[in-house]
Image 1 (tube, rainbow, N blue to C red):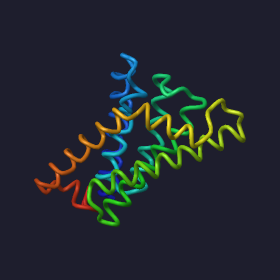
Image 2 (cartoon, helix red, strand yellow):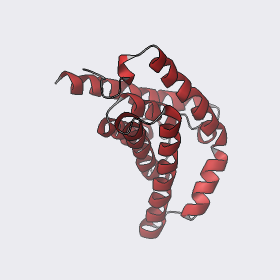
Image 3 (tube, one colour):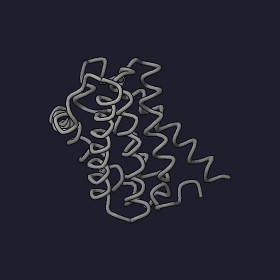
Length: 179
């Protein structure tokens, strides 16, 4: 099916971007501050159906960990898989299904992703004895540490999406990529 094939090709590009972009930031030690892996995943949510965007979010940190060692396999990669899958799914769901504006969709997905990462941290510490802070402390610390990246996401991603909306890009036609 053309729609599925186009979505899979686009998903592959977002995954590749999600591996290469963090490599540049980790080279200078700024990966956890600027959250570069989040950008392609969040963008995929605006352009792909929710299941495909969730797949981008889940696959990107896994492949990045396998190819580059970042994020570390345990305990960081598991909660990032759930967090980024939630980002992709919720961004697409809010923007493409609920037809919410770009800012509401982005902020809503970021909040949901942090909540899911907190739950994942709780599971990792409770069931797998991971050496991580409690979920509330973890979420607060990750937001504080990642604040520059969050600000960049809140500026850059809406700018890209709004530019595409302005020019009526087919990829943002809400459910039209690949059709």
